[in-house]
Length: 336
Ligand code: ADE
Ligand code: ZN
Image (tube, rainbow, N blue to C red; front, top):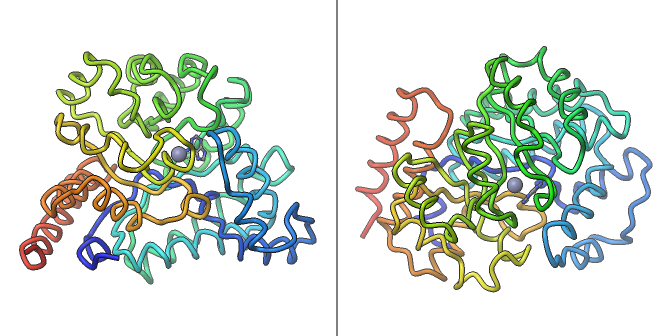
């Protein structure tokens, strides 16, 4: 992989921690927790990672999450991700977690939270990666279930920056969660939502107007609505784009047909992220590399994507500025 991309200081803003569960760790945890997997080997698991759309992925993703049982499992999962992120010079990460995929199985919210949070703290101390946590609601479940989850998160609200919305998009519009997001904002959370991954641009408008999101997760279908594109550019509402995910889930036929460069050229605040790297064939640097190769991005465009990642983050202004200064320095020294 291109050294310029690997060493580029960057922030990751769209990462589901459950989506970093590599098959090797899945098998280790299945054995540790005496859970039977539907696969007989790591290669059989990898063969199953052949998706037609978002739902076919989610079915396998939730099944994989079943091996996560003890606080230590969540710690090990998060620690493995952070070690990988450190090798790709991720300076700051804002990670999603899906409490409902665990509480539904009788695992306490606290077990999930503590394992993830302790690993993030260790990562900050030992690897120098700062972090924020985003609690996601599964949109295929009811608003009442989301409210229960929000209430479980309240005791930890000082350490959870935002609430998000993920899972099956089509048929589960942002409007379904308007009251929950209102409550979350009253409690002091920022908001984000997956929108326009498979869903229509109308879902992106709803995320903006009803959920008052600070960022749109994915948002690639915004291209179909000129007024929306104009608004996203004017307001600089960031999109957390995940190129390899979009290819694996057949949002675009091929990486050459991805619209990331088009969105950048239209002046949108586009960022590059990995979504569920264990399932989609690459972490953040592989995502940068894939779009650079396929869309012929130059070093200035790659630099802009990294700068956008800091700008779009939930970091304090001063910290953002110092990371951007570090990035500028890197760019001056390493670009040809
Ligand atoms: N959960 C994990 N990955 C997701 C994605 N790409 N879209 C919606 N929900 C998800
Ligand atoms: Zn996602």
